Length: 126
Image (cartoon, rainbow, N blue to C red):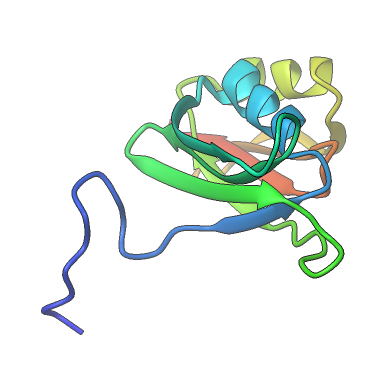
């Protein structure tokens, strides 16, 4: 596995999410985490066939769910500069609180469920 060829700008392991509303998920990641749209291919005028966002040095791939490919949310851990501010922004964008940010051994961390079924653990290092 050490000689794996990986395209530039990608990681060896990346989440691939199937979303009930892929376009809204794209907007959520941009507003809350400052995600940059890397790629978007449409199935038709309103349906994302495949999209990618970059948050920092990481890429999340996702697509609109279909009858064949039902929603597949994930749990995601993300480092940010200010866990409290990003946590509040996520709530403003429709996420639901799991755990308010608190000081833990590895940093300040809190959790939310986004409107698409994903869990985000938002953490900043002390």
